[in-house]
Length: 107
Length: 120
Image (cartoon, rainbow over the protein chains, first blue to last red):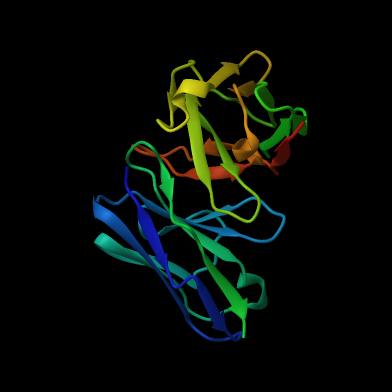
């Protein structure tokens, strides 16, 4: 089973700042990495798949990058609605696994 | 616009079977993969398993002995059963659809989730 470790656990930033979220895998991965956003009381929403492809309707301030064991989600300029928990996911193998999440909170 | 809606009991007794149904509205189940995921209160996401519209299912090895996922395309529904539940099975359960892309697929459409508590 692939283990995904996200860091930091919590990121305290102000609107307008840049957010950089990390996801490290326990073994080398192919390009089947996705990122999801979850707000309180809501289901997660797909942001990025295939490491760097934005899902339909996702603004271009969200971008994904990485290869091998290290992957990154970047939010170029935080909007008020971006404060949430973000999960990375590996979906190329079984079982599908998620990171433990990074909370982006308002500083 | 396709929507997913989970339904089933919100309270299940220990050792009994948890049963949930996901109803797909506004679209067809054909050619899609469908999954169940759960999230214990205040914790992260755990993938339970997926099923193709033809009925082929794959499960998380950690749950395989207790889980069954089935599909009924005539009703536009798929279902989850978890047997011998304990308090550790208390969670919000989400049904979801896999994105229609070639190769392995992320999850692009989620139900709102339903809270299931295991307690006597």
